[in-house]
Image 1 (tube, rainbow, N blue to C red):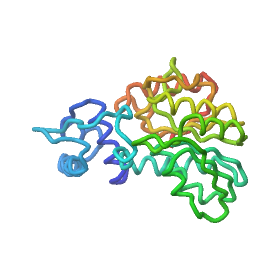
Image 2 (spheres, helix red, strand yellow; image 1 turned 135 degrees about the vertical axis):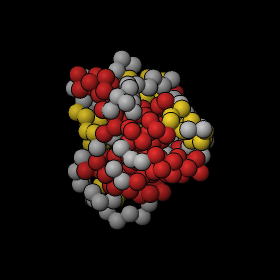
Image 3 (tube, rainbow, N blue to C red; image 1 turned 90 degrees about the horizontal axis):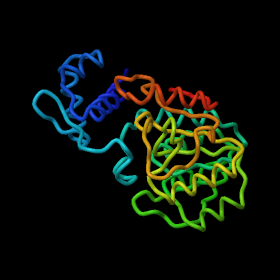
Length: 261
Protein backbone atom coordinates (compact mmCIF):
# COMPACT_ATOMS: atom_id res chain seq x y z
CA UNK A 1 0.00 0.00 0.00
CA UNK A 2 1.11 3.56 -0.59
CA UNK A 3 1.90 6.01 2.22
CA UNK A 4 -1.54 7.66 2.25
CA UNK A 5 -3.35 4.35 2.45
CA UNK A 6 -0.96 3.11 5.13
CA UNK A 7 -1.80 6.16 7.25
CA UNK A 8 -5.51 5.44 6.81
CA UNK A 9 -5.12 1.81 7.88
CA UNK A 10 -2.88 2.75 10.81
CA UNK A 11 -5.48 5.23 12.04
CA UNK A 12 -8.24 2.62 11.77
CA UNK A 13 -6.20 0.04 13.68
CA UNK A 14 -5.55 2.52 16.50
CA UNK A 15 -9.20 3.61 16.60
CA UNK A 16 -10.41 0.02 16.53
CA UNK A 17 -8.22 -1.03 19.44
CA UNK A 18 -8.28 2.30 21.35
CA UNK A 19 -4.60 1.62 22.06
CA UNK A 20 -2.17 0.01 19.63
CA UNK A 21 1.48 -0.97 20.09
CA UNK A 22 4.14 -0.11 17.53
CA UNK A 23 5.22 -3.75 17.34
CA UNK A 24 1.65 -4.92 16.64
CA UNK A 25 1.12 -2.26 13.98
CA UNK A 26 4.39 -3.10 12.25
CA UNK A 27 3.46 -6.79 12.12
CA UNK A 28 -0.04 -6.06 10.86
CA UNK A 29 1.10 -3.63 8.16
CA UNK A 30 4.23 -5.50 7.10
CA UNK A 31 6.50 -2.49 7.58
CA UNK A 32 9.33 -1.57 9.94
CA UNK A 33 8.73 -0.20 13.42
CA UNK A 34 10.55 2.97 12.36
CA UNK A 35 7.99 3.48 9.57
CA UNK A 36 5.14 2.97 12.05
CA UNK A 37 6.64 5.53 14.43
CA UNK A 38 6.91 8.09 11.63
CA UNK A 39 3.31 7.43 10.62
CA UNK A 40 2.10 7.78 14.20
CA UNK A 41 3.98 11.06 14.50
CA UNK A 42 2.19 12.28 11.36
CA UNK A 43 -1.21 11.24 12.73
CA UNK A 44 -0.44 12.91 16.06
CA UNK A 45 0.42 16.19 14.31
CA UNK A 46 -3.02 16.00 12.65
CA UNK A 47 -4.63 15.51 16.06
CA UNK A 48 -5.95 12.03 15.21
CA UNK A 49 -3.91 9.97 17.70
CA UNK A 50 -1.88 10.60 20.83
CA UNK A 51 1.52 8.98 21.20
CA UNK A 52 2.08 6.97 24.35
CA UNK A 53 4.97 4.76 25.43
CA UNK A 54 5.32 1.98 22.88
CA UNK A 55 2.39 2.99 20.70
CA UNK A 56 -0.59 5.33 20.36
CA UNK A 57 -4.17 5.85 21.50
CA UNK A 58 -7.13 7.27 19.60
CA UNK A 59 -8.09 10.86 20.31
CA UNK A 60 -11.36 11.00 18.35
CA UNK A 61 -14.43 8.82 18.01
CA UNK A 62 -14.79 6.64 14.91
CA UNK A 63 -18.59 6.70 15.06
CA UNK A 64 -19.23 9.95 13.23
CA UNK A 65 -19.03 12.49 16.07
CA UNK A 66 -17.91 15.99 15.19
CA UNK A 67 -18.90 18.31 12.40
CA UNK A 68 -17.98 18.31 8.73
CA UNK A 69 -14.82 20.36 9.13
CA UNK A 70 -13.64 18.12 11.97
CA UNK A 71 -13.92 15.00 9.80
CA UNK A 72 -13.10 16.30 6.33
CA UNK A 73 -9.46 15.14 6.28
CA UNK A 74 -10.04 11.73 7.87
CA UNK A 75 -9.13 8.85 5.54
CA UNK A 76 -8.89 11.19 2.55
CA UNK A 77 -7.08 8.64 0.36
CA UNK A 78 -9.79 6.05 0.97
CA UNK A 79 -12.54 8.54 0.26
CA UNK A 80 -10.87 9.53 -3.01
CA UNK A 81 -11.11 5.87 -4.06
CA UNK A 82 -14.72 5.65 -2.93
CA UNK A 83 -15.62 8.80 -4.83
CA UNK A 84 -14.06 7.51 -8.04
CA UNK A 85 -15.76 4.11 -7.67
CA UNK A 86 -19.19 5.67 -7.11
CA UNK A 87 -18.81 8.04 -10.07
CA UNK A 88 -17.86 5.11 -12.32
CA UNK A 89 -21.24 3.49 -11.54
CA UNK A 90 -23.20 6.54 -12.74
CA UNK A 91 -24.01 6.88 -16.43
CA UNK A 92 -23.63 10.25 -18.17
CA UNK A 93 -27.02 11.85 -18.66
CA UNK A 94 -28.33 10.66 -15.29
CA UNK A 95 -30.41 12.70 -12.85
CA UNK A 96 -28.43 12.35 -9.62
CA UNK A 97 -29.37 13.21 -6.05
CA UNK A 98 -26.14 13.67 -4.09
CA UNK A 99 -26.29 13.35 -0.32
CA UNK A 100 -24.43 15.41 2.29
CA UNK A 101 -21.29 14.18 4.05
CA UNK A 102 -17.52 14.15 3.78
CA UNK A 103 -17.43 11.17 1.40
CA UNK A 104 -19.87 12.70 -1.08
CA UNK A 105 -17.57 15.69 -1.53
CA UNK A 106 -15.11 13.22 -3.07
CA UNK A 107 -17.94 11.78 -5.16
CA UNK A 108 -18.82 15.27 -6.39
CA UNK A 109 -15.25 15.88 -7.54
CA UNK A 110 -15.22 12.58 -9.44
CA UNK A 111 -18.60 13.25 -11.07
CA UNK A 112 -17.06 16.05 -13.10
CA UNK A 113 -15.59 13.26 -15.27
CA UNK A 114 -19.04 11.70 -15.94
CA UNK A 115 -20.78 14.62 -17.63
CA UNK A 116 -23.34 15.54 -18.78
CA UNK A 117 -25.30 15.19 -15.55
CA UNK A 118 -28.13 16.79 -13.66
CA UNK A 119 -27.09 16.86 -9.98
CA UNK A 120 -29.26 17.92 -7.06
CA UNK A 121 -27.20 18.41 -3.91
CA UNK A 122 -28.07 18.23 -0.23
CA UNK A 123 -25.12 20.12 1.20
CA UNK A 124 -23.30 23.39 0.77
CA UNK A 125 -19.94 21.61 0.36
CA UNK A 126 -21.02 19.56 -2.65
CA UNK A 127 -22.70 22.64 -4.13
CA UNK A 128 -19.38 24.49 -3.96
CA UNK A 129 -17.60 21.57 -5.65
CA UNK A 130 -20.00 21.49 -8.59
CA UNK A 131 -20.73 25.18 -9.06
CA UNK A 132 -19.84 26.39 -12.57
CA UNK A 133 -18.72 22.92 -13.70
CA UNK A 134 -19.21 22.49 -17.46
CA UNK A 135 -22.07 20.17 -18.48
CA UNK A 136 -23.38 19.78 -14.94
CA UNK A 137 -26.85 21.14 -14.30
CA UNK A 138 -26.69 21.94 -10.60
CA UNK A 139 -29.78 22.18 -8.41
CA UNK A 140 -29.54 22.96 -4.71
CA UNK A 141 -32.27 21.56 -2.48
CA UNK A 142 -33.89 24.18 -0.30
CA UNK A 143 -33.91 23.90 3.45
CA UNK A 144 -32.05 24.81 6.58
CA UNK A 145 -28.28 24.39 6.67
CA UNK A 146 -27.58 22.26 9.72
CA UNK A 147 -24.82 23.90 11.80
CA UNK A 148 -21.53 22.04 11.71
CA UNK A 149 -22.57 19.66 8.93
CA UNK A 150 -23.97 22.26 6.49
CA UNK A 151 -26.35 19.58 5.24
CA UNK A 152 -29.69 20.86 3.94
CA UNK A 153 -32.58 19.59 6.04
CA UNK A 154 -36.08 20.39 7.21
CA UNK A 155 -39.51 20.86 5.59
CA UNK A 156 -38.24 22.93 2.66
CA UNK A 157 -35.68 20.27 1.71
CA UNK A 158 -38.31 17.54 1.97
CA UNK A 159 -40.78 19.45 -0.20
CA UNK A 160 -38.09 20.02 -2.84
CA UNK A 161 -37.29 16.32 -3.01
CA UNK A 162 -40.94 15.30 -3.15
CA UNK A 163 -41.34 17.44 -6.31
CA UNK A 164 -38.46 15.76 -8.17
CA UNK A 165 -37.57 12.32 -9.55
CA UNK A 166 -34.06 10.90 -9.76
CA UNK A 167 -32.32 8.10 -11.60
CA UNK A 168 -29.91 7.52 -8.73
CA UNK A 169 -29.54 8.65 -5.13
CA UNK A 170 -25.95 8.61 -3.87
CA UNK A 171 -26.57 8.13 -0.15
CA UNK A 172 -23.87 8.60 2.45
CA UNK A 173 -24.63 6.99 5.79
CA UNK A 174 -23.64 7.17 9.43
CA UNK A 175 -24.25 3.52 10.30
CA UNK A 176 -24.68 0.19 8.51
CA UNK A 177 -25.92 -2.65 10.70
CA UNK A 178 -26.97 -6.17 9.76
CA UNK A 179 -30.20 -6.03 11.76
CA UNK A 180 -30.86 -2.31 12.18
CA UNK A 181 -30.15 -1.42 8.55
CA UNK A 182 -29.09 2.05 7.39
CA UNK A 183 -29.06 4.70 10.12
CA UNK A 184 -28.06 8.29 10.84
CA UNK A 185 -27.05 10.29 13.88
CA UNK A 186 -29.50 13.11 13.13
CA UNK A 187 -33.28 12.81 12.81
CA UNK A 188 -33.24 15.61 10.24
CA UNK A 189 -30.64 13.89 8.06
CA UNK A 190 -32.48 10.58 8.34
CA UNK A 191 -35.74 12.17 7.13
CA UNK A 192 -34.03 13.68 4.07
CA UNK A 193 -32.45 10.32 3.20
CA UNK A 194 -35.83 8.60 3.46
CA UNK A 195 -37.26 11.13 0.99
CA UNK A 196 -34.31 10.59 -1.33
CA UNK A 197 -34.85 6.83 -1.31
CA UNK A 198 -38.56 7.27 -2.09
CA UNK A 199 -37.88 9.54 -5.08
CA UNK A 200 -35.09 7.55 -6.71
CA UNK A 201 -35.08 4.58 -9.08
CA UNK A 202 -31.74 3.38 -7.75
CA UNK A 203 -30.06 3.87 -4.38
CA UNK A 204 -26.27 3.75 -4.34
CA UNK A 205 -25.02 3.87 -0.75
CA UNK A 206 -21.44 4.76 0.09
CA UNK A 207 -19.50 4.72 3.35
CA UNK A 208 -16.03 3.89 4.53
CA UNK A 209 -15.59 0.71 6.53
CA UNK A 210 -15.68 2.45 9.91
CA UNK A 211 -19.47 2.74 9.49
CA UNK A 212 -20.00 -1.03 9.33
CA UNK A 213 -21.62 -2.54 12.41
CA UNK A 214 -22.67 0.92 13.67
CA UNK A 215 -26.23 1.55 14.89
CA UNK A 216 -26.74 5.30 14.74
CA UNK A 217 -29.61 7.07 16.50
CA UNK A 218 -32.22 7.22 13.75
CA UNK A 219 -33.05 4.31 11.46
CA UNK A 220 -33.29 5.33 7.79
CA UNK A 221 -34.34 2.08 6.11
CA UNK A 222 -33.71 -1.64 5.95
CA UNK A 223 -30.61 -2.85 4.14
CA UNK A 224 -32.73 -3.92 1.15
CA UNK A 225 -33.64 -0.26 0.46
CA UNK A 226 -30.28 0.16 -1.27
CA UNK A 227 -29.36 -1.50 -4.55
CA UNK A 228 -25.59 -1.14 -4.29
CA UNK A 229 -23.05 -0.32 -1.60
CA UNK A 230 -19.54 1.04 -2.13
CA UNK A 231 -17.03 0.73 0.70
CA UNK A 232 -13.29 0.28 1.06
CA UNK A 233 -11.55 -3.07 0.92
CA UNK A 234 -10.52 -3.03 4.57
CA UNK A 235 -14.19 -3.78 5.38
CA UNK A 236 -13.49 -7.45 4.77
CA UNK A 237 -10.53 -7.50 7.18
CA UNK A 238 -11.76 -8.54 10.62
CA UNK A 239 -8.46 -7.50 12.21
CA UNK A 240 -9.17 -3.89 11.29
CA UNK A 241 -13.00 -3.94 11.41
CA UNK A 242 -14.38 -6.90 13.39
CA UNK A 243 -17.96 -6.00 12.39
CA UNK A 244 -17.05 -5.64 8.73
CA UNK A 245 -17.32 -9.19 7.33
CA UNK A 246 -20.64 -10.07 9.02
CA UNK A 247 -22.16 -6.75 7.92
CA UNK A 248 -21.05 -7.34 4.33
CA UNK A 249 -22.61 -10.81 4.50
CA UNK A 250 -25.88 -9.29 5.73
CA UNK A 251 -25.86 -6.78 2.88
CA UNK A 252 -25.38 -9.50 0.28
CA UNK A 253 -28.11 -11.60 1.85
CA UNK A 254 -30.42 -8.57 1.55
CA UNK A 255 -29.72 -8.43 -2.19
CA UNK A 256 -27.36 -5.45 -2.08
CA UNK A 257 -24.47 -5.54 -4.57
CA UNK A 258 -21.27 -4.75 -2.64
CA UNK A 259 -18.30 -3.01 -4.23
CA UNK A 260 -15.16 -3.03 -2.03
CA UNK A 261 -12.48 -0.77 -3.52
